Image 1 (cartoon, rainbow, N blue to C red):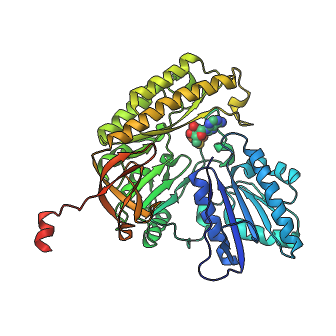
Image 2 (cartoon, rainbow, N blue to C red):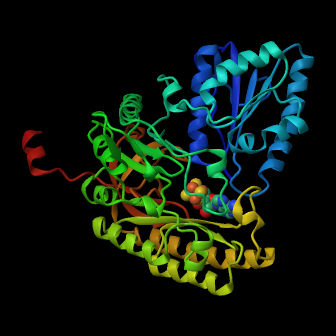
Image 3 (cartoon, rainbow, N blue to C red):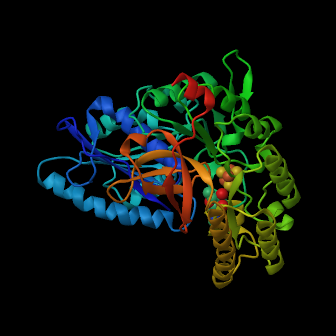
Length: 469
Ligand code: 5AD
Ligand code: SF4
C-alpha cells in the first residue's frame, strides 16, 4: 500500500485552521483526499504538511489487502498522542477516519479508538462539513457509513484545488462484479456513473488549471455508462472521444478496467483517439480457467487473450499492465503454471501481483482449500521474477527510440526535469524548466528498472511550419 501526504505548505498566509490528510491505497483514495480537502476549504481549513498542531487530521484508509485494520489502529495510536498534546495546549484536533476501513469496520474503530471524532465511508464525503460541525457541537463521535441514495458526485463542490500537469478525475465508483476475493463491492457499493456533462466540466476546469494529462478513475472505470448531454447514455469510448476534443488536453488514460466491460467502442477509441495513451492496466488475476471461475471473474483466459489481440490490432504499440493474485483458495500448482503461461504469452510492460489475503465477509475468505503461506510466497516470487524480467525487457526495448515525453516537474538533481512516456514510464533528463507542461521528443539512452533517461531532441520542423516561421 502506498502512503502519500497530499498536503502542501500554505503559501498564501497563515490559514485559520490546519488540515492534514494521510492517504493510503489506490488512486481513487488520492482523488477522494483532494475532494475532502476541497469541501473543507470553505470552512477555513488549509492543507498542512504535518499532523503536529493540525486542527483536523483525516486518515483515508484502504481495506483491499493485508492487515489493513491493524495498520489503521497503529496510526491512530500515534495520532492520539498528538491530539492529546494539542488538547493539553488548549487547542483541539478533530480526528476523522475515512475510506474503506471506515466503511467496513466503523463500529470497531469507535469501540477500540473512542478518541476518533468522525468515521465516514467513501460515499459520504460531501457531508463532511456537516459532520465536522456536529462533532464540534456534540463532543461525541459521528459515524456516517450509509450508502445514501443521493449521488455524492453531484453534491461535491465545483471549486477544486489545482492538481498539476497530470490530474485524476473520478467518473465512476463502486462495483457490481463481486469477485470472490474483493471487498470493493461491499465498501464502495454499487456501480454508479457520473453524468457526462459534469465529467466534461471538471475536465475543462482541470485543463484551465494547467492539467495536460487526465486519468479517468473508477473501481471499474470501463463499466462507466453515464448520462449523455442529450439524455441518452454514453459508454467510456464515447466519453473519451469527447474529452479528446478539449483544447490543450494532450493525453488521456483510464484505470482500472474489467475485461468484461471492454466493449468494441472502447477498443476502437484506442485506434482512433491519438490522445488516448498506448498503455492499459487490465487486471486478469489468473491464467487458469478453474481459478477464474472460482474467482467469479466472468471471463476465461481465452477471452482475455482474444481481447488483448483485438486491442493490439487497434493499437499495435499498446503496452499492458495487469493485476495477479496467487494462492486464491483452491489454486493448485497446475493453476499457477497456467498463470505463468498466460504471462509468457502476453508479455507485460509492468504488473502488480499479490498473495491472496482473506478479507472478512467475502466468499473466498471462508472457502475450502486455503493455500499455505509458504506456497503463496514461492508462487509470488516466481511470478514476480517473470514480471520483472518482462518489465526490464520492455524498458530495454525503448532504448534508442524517440518518445514524446510530457514534462511534469523538476527532476531529482539540479538542471533535471522529469516526465512520463506514453507508456507511463518515468523519464528523467537534463533539460530546461520551461518545458514543464509541454510534450517534447526524447531520445531514450538508457533504461533503469523503473524509469528511463535520455536526451532532448530538437523537434524536426515540418515544411509548412518552416514556411510560416
Ligand atoms: N487479496 C489479494 N489481492 C487482492 N486484490 C483485491 N483483493 C485482494 C485480496 N483479497 C488485488 C486484485 C485487484 C487489486 C487492486 O488488488 O489483484 O485487482
Ligand atoms: Fe473488486 Fe475489481 Fe472484482 Fe470489482 S471487478 S469485485 S473492484 S476485483
